[in-house]
Amino acid sequence: MALLKEDTHYLPSYTYEDYKHWDGDWEIIRGVAYAMSPAPVKRHQMLVGLIFSEIISKNYHCRECEVLIDSDWKLNSSNILKPDVSIVCNDKNIKYISKTPEVIFEVISPSTARRDEELKYSIYASEGVKYYILIYPNELVAKVYKNNDFTFKKLGEFDSETLDFIDTKCDFSFDFDAIFKRFRD
Image 1 (cartoon, rainbow, N blue to C red):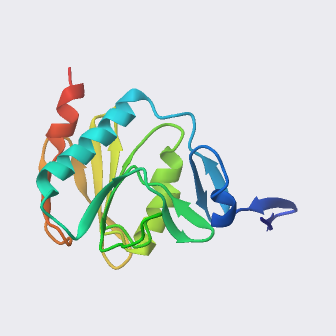
Image 2 (image 1 turned 90 degrees about the vertical axis):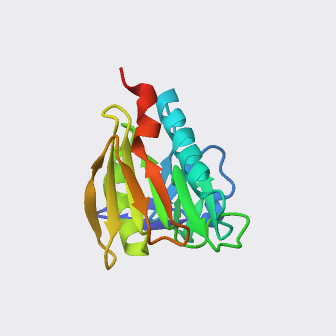
């Protein structure tokens, strides 16, 4: 652990070597540790499962890519992220994600909203993630962003539409109605 100077205060700077020894769920962004607690609420967890199922049901035939839930993505020793759902292609590493995911879904919760909408958004864009989808459980809407030259452009807000992901290694369609309909009145 090193110390980062911020104004006149020193903050600890953590690395993957520190992270490997911690209990619980964590992320490290620019050397700063973020606890992933408390555990997500039931709706958050159900949406993650439904997103996974929707992708698997449309993409099960693709042998190049994996659909992962809550897996570590090690960008470097001081940036370890944990996307809710990701699609990763041609990554032979068995311990953690080592290649840039094609698609990332993050389900927004009050404790992670700023991190997902700002910090992770900018990191995912600069790392070349092709699609970033933010799921808002209370509003039952998804904001979809597509990467264009390492900058995200908003494709729109989806609640009952189907979106075709046609420029990923394993093309698939995603039905937003399929994941949201359970929660509608």
